[in-house]
Length: 498
Image (tube, rainbow, N blue to C red; front, side, top):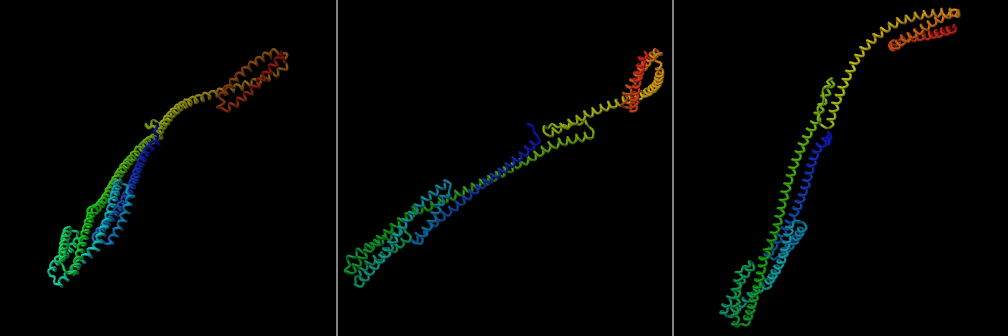
């Protein structure tokens, strides 16, 4: 394949364009990847926000549960329902937003745990409601009523002079009051020691009352004390039921709520950590891709720059050197030096130009040789022409002399013709003589014709250079014709004379 200048330029700058296209492609790819990473970061930001909303809602829900366990108020229960709805909404958004399989698994675990957590809290609420009902209907009413009943019995016994029974009923009242005190403490702190102490005090009070009831003689006091004993039994049984409810509530709180709640928060933290890790990974990957793209762009740009400089240098050198060589050779040739040639080995348009110049110089050199040869020939021809001119000049002199002789001969012949004419009258007598004279005149005429033809040939050979001789030649021709006519007439006369 012939590497022309156009192809060299095309390949050189085409390579630069390819490099620049690679830079553009790398930049475009880096831009696409950066946009992709930005979208991923945005998605993870949204996921993080959703996860944070869910975690916040769960924390507020747990706080509402804690408050409810302490205060047992409807406001805290309503607050739990509010944050529960917010948490479930955030959880739903998390399910539709998260694309990571691990996070989807964590969301599924959170959902399962919260279902158990919510169901357990409902059980706790039922237990607390039952406890509050028993407390409101039994402990707060029956305990106080039993205390008042015992006090009334003591008052009746004291006024009726039964001091011995007063001394027996008074410890039961004190035990009941102390039992009620530990009941209140237990209801406040759910301490098992307070429960045992309260139960012991109530049982002892119940036992003492049972022992005293049968010995009281006053029917009204005995009946009232028996009723106080029944109320005390009801109070103790109610407290035991409250204790059981509190134990069950505590078991549910400790075994489920206090386990599932933190576990849900832990799973949410894992989601957040997963999002943070993915965000850091995406950020690191994006930074790595940006750095790689920058390095590739710098490297390819440097290569493109070097290639462009190299291509420009090589192409400039391939173009300027032959052009300078051609220009230098042409300058020398224009100065007259036809020995110079262009030495260019390139097989392109510049090589063709150099070969053309070399061919032109060769042609000019050959033409100059031909001109020089022609000059020598012209010089020889000029010498020869000069000699011919001299020869012609000599011939002209000779011809002039002959012409003079011819004129003289013509005049002589004219006179002879006149004589012949004069003598033709007496042709009969002088026929023989005239015949001889005619033959002699014919011979002379023939010799004259021959001489004239020679003169005519000489004149013809020099007619191209001497115009005057041409004119005289014509006159001589006319004279020859006249002489021929005279010769004819002389011959005719000779025949007639014979």
